[in-house]
Image (cartoon, rainbow, N blue to C red; front, side):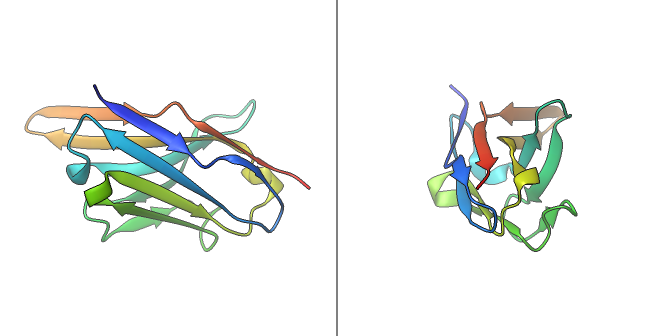
Length: 120
């Protein structure tokens, strides 16, 4: 059974930090490109950060560049999002996503999301 389970969300203070984890199971994690998305109330889901299967390439959306860091630990089948210098506008549900193309088939998995609220 394929699963992506996010954890680490909660209440963070402006200027503070949170670290999200995404634990994968049921598929070949190490060959998947992993991403973090977020969706704020009444807004569309947006891409936050992407990391290649080996972890050698990372990309960030402009609104988190320099504040957030995406990483992965392939032996542990886990991806992370370190969030520093949090802002109230970072408040959203954060989702983990895994994508891969194997042969002619494309695979796309999502976690259930974890709520991040930034407030003093």
